[in-house]
Image (cartoon, rainbow, N blue to C red; front, side, top):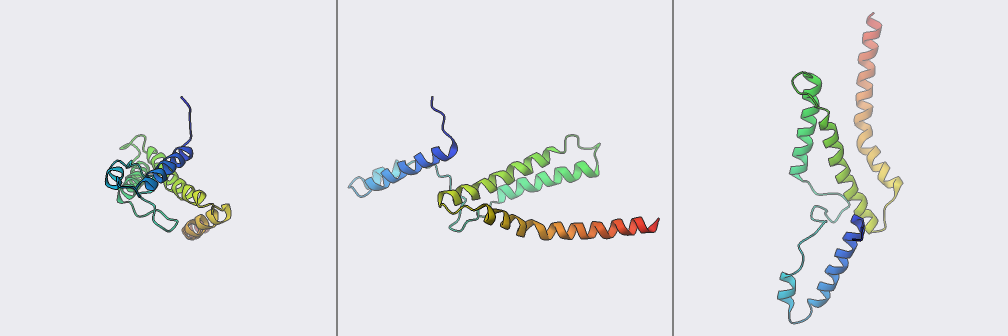
Length: 144
């Protein structure tokens, strides 16, 4: 059996869908559309370059974060709580790879654009946390 990667599989599905769309101009239009495969990898991708809001994914992220918080607050209560980090990273990887795949299909992917978006989103929270940790650390160190 020949192994193909996900991108090749999606490309072959797209070619198959185009062949069906060409045949829809014939008199058998209704029959062909009914038999069209329902596999669509872009159901959650809007016309812009971002994924649409998915409450199921948001719920999984919430559960993952809560598991990590409970594990750090009460380590004896929940063993193996760091699995929440793995779940969170897997979800993030799914969302980010969806954005990258869509950009690659349009031939508009750029590492600079990709990382600048991540920096604009993450750095404000990072700088805020670093600032407050610095203030608390300095007050604790100077209190001695």
